[in-house]
Image (tube, rainbow, N blue to C red):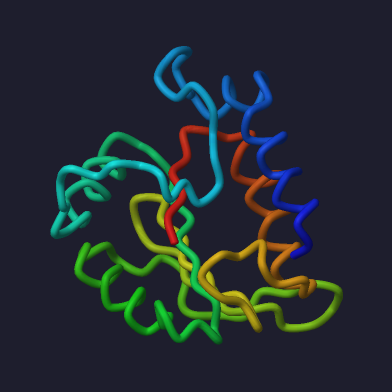
Amino acid sequence: MHEEGYSMSSIWANNRAVRETLGVHKGTVPVWVRCNHGTPYTTDIRSSVEYHRSLAKRGYRSLIYSGDHDMTVPFIGTQAWIRSLRFAVVDQWRPWYATGQVAGFTTLYANNLTFATVKDGSLCEGEGESDASWSLFAWMCLVHLPTLPFALSF
């Protein structure tokens, strides 16, 4: 993705209407910053499994995605992490499409959790310019966001 695309994500994520739709409470996050490397982390969270179980029990929908070419966070590791949640499979591993082509694969789990791979994708999904990357972004914005609550992980 070109640099101007990154600035567009900041404009979108800091928009008042978007923040209200996402449920960002006023004053909790002053401004959204993509890849904020200046955050002074003071704690290390060893596992987010219980966090995700808790969100699922509260009714939050989750879309967890991985690029199929990501060597930093391979999708098979993400699948193993999802299996550790022990949610039943509702819709088996199947392809999803963009512009008539296979754009990746998806599995739907109980508790409103969807896992998707993105063809030719990597860790920061806006970095690719493939139809699959943009289709996943559109899917998140047009399909999932209007039906909040929703949580996103990668």
